[in-house]
Amino acid sequence: MNRVYLLLLLSLALSACSKQYANQNVLGKSFPSVVGESLQGEVKQLPADVQSNATILLIGYVQNSQFDIDRWLIGMDMVGVKAPAYEIPTIAGLFPQFFETQINDGMRKGIPKELWKGVITIYDDGETVQQFTGNTNPNNARVMVLNSVGEVIYFYDRGFSVDALKNLVQVIEQQYANKF
Image (cartoon, helix red, strand yellow):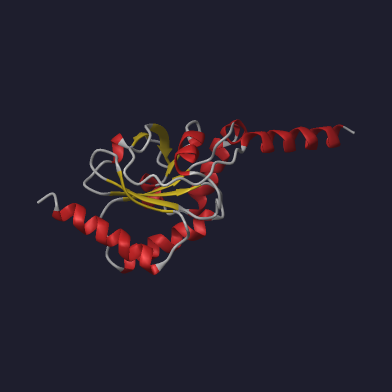
């Protein structure tokens, strides 16, 4: 009986923590100010602490979005994208915050140490980011490029495609060309 009660409470807690937000077109909007922590343990204020002429954020809301993020990272490497890119695992709700350490430790086991500074997890402000972009089809990464003031100048949330990658590269090249 206690096991059934515990499972019921656990399932209620999990379902209560996950809200659905319709996907948004965030192009031209300012990325919200949120706090995360790199896998190296450094507290990061986004977008302030990662600003450059063009900064790429690869945001994932569920573990399965890692597949899409990996395709983006491989594609960007293959075409020689030089702009800084950050993986942003973003988990909303109170329940995941209780297991933040275990979740981050699990990620550290699967990610080489030299890449930890480029992975910034967001828990406390996870809902803010999910509201900003929407979280429908959570397996798809939310890929965005921010300019030097944190404005979204590229956004894509429909899963990796070669055409989307070409558009991302074009936006980054234009951004750097405009700065010189």
